[in-house]
Length: 277
Image 1 (cartoon, rainbow, N blue to C red):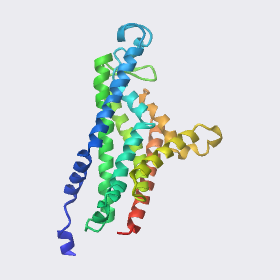
Image 2: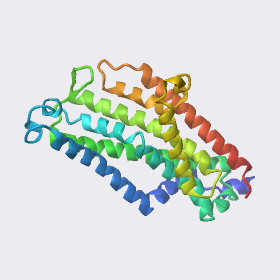
Image 3: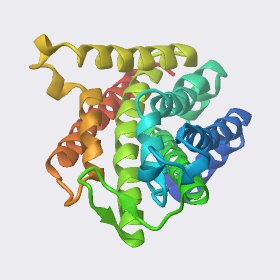
Image 4: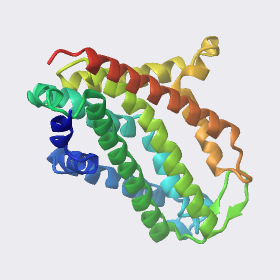
């Protein structure tokens, strides 16, 4: 037992190694760069959609002028239905199915790391990169919004205007809420990734599930099912833009995503525990 412990690398080193492995992949760099374009294009599109010459014109300009801090929140909600789940599914697919496809997962499973610890390291990498991606979108969105529309405050759905500091707090809260939702989708993708050696299967199955859940959420005859669909909870996240801040829907959506995280990682752990070397 002592020899086994001696050969086990420190957990911190393993986590850093996992992050470096993810960041150094060309697809990660390209994906993050593409995510930066989302708030920029959304901001430019909104700027040109304003009636008149630029954000000083009438119509929509009366809403967005000086309200650029809404752009990062708007962009995150815009990316949540498809783009961000796809990003989480890609990293989850590469974490296990990608390793299996390249033949490296077998070697990792016979090392003294332990299968549950291996899953934890892979999940940490996906969770960290997801948080970074969501934060990156919000950061670029905030900068773009302030440049194009100004950033004196944030106009809420309730009609009130938050101060600059309060607006930043709402942006941070939105980052955390959206990240947890993407974690829920990525956890299910991890479970699928543990069952196949084809990353494309993981991405296709995950995105198909997201689309099916969204379609099921449209039918009123399935109201009994809606509380269990993670996509149905995403609409309630718009409460982050109300003043005073209602928390019921925010807590419910977060708790539902937490259940998906628990179920997904549990299924992945069960599969890895019984997976042949």
